[in-house]
Length: 51
Image 1 (spheres, rainbow, N blue to C red):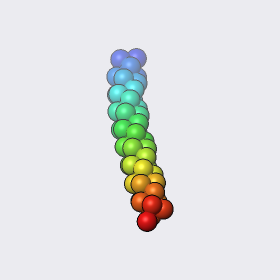
Image 2 (image 1 turned 135 degrees about the vertical axis):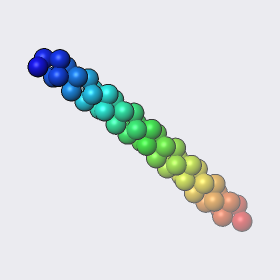
Image 3 (image 1 turned 135 degrees about the horizontal axis):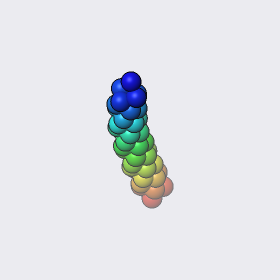
């Protein structure tokens, strides 16, 4: 019985670690996209101001 619980606990641990890794990758990607958008916006605004 204990072996079954240990196996379930290990599976849950692996699932949670995988989910957390995917979430962190998504957050990092989202932040990079937002930073790129801000840089592009700033560059466009600077270009308009120079005209």
